[in-house]
Amino acid sequence: FSRSVQESTASGFCQELAQTCKLLGMEFNSEPAIPMYSARPEQAVQVLKHVYNAALKKLKGKELELLLVILPDNNGALYGDIKRICETELGLMSQCCLAKHVFKICKRYLANVSLKINVKMGGRNTILLDAVSRRIPLVSDIPTIIFGADVTHPETREDNSPSIAAVVASQDWPEVTKYAGLVCAQAYRQELIQDLYKTWHDPQRGTVTGGMIRELLISFRKATGQKPLRIIFYR
Image 1: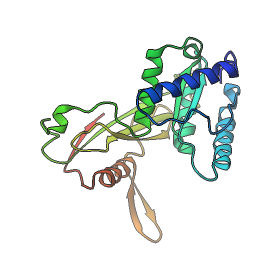
Image 2: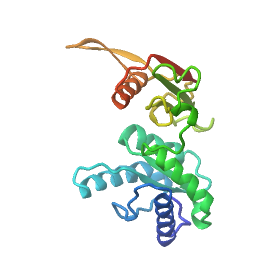
Image 3: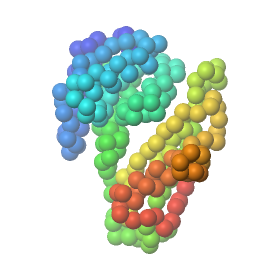
């Protein structure tokens, strides 16, 4: 989405990033699943959906695992729009990079982005020795899940853009170093997380409960084989 970045420059940056991921121990395919696309910021919705559908077609039903997006240095609401579309509409993991980092490739920056990608793809960057040896107070004694939640709001003048709520939760115990996250779009500048917990009426099942908390609790049980006996929630 940056007009100043030529395809050859973007391709070189992506190759360097892929190589850094490999050097840090990640399995990373250097060849893109689909061709590179370029578009204006106002075309974000159409282009992202087109890329997603093109990937599904080429990968024969397999989902695209990661989308790399290059943004202008001054991108206004574009970053929030991309995250909203990818993660709340398409269910697609994305990693955004600013154009200035593409032009001036820095090994430290590539390493930082690689670590972000590793976490997004379900990997671990660190393991606490005290966690492995079960010496962390209020965490190590019984199965514990740790939540974190926040709401990001658009700029005041952008009253047509939604706020984005995000909730993450640990998915391993006793290590508590792997996290899963959920995001949802909600009313403009609404601070209360609307989809945290919700109930609705189903004609066949009656009252149904759900929401982000429930989904992450179920995910924790599937990952660990245990129900959490303690919940720690950071807001």
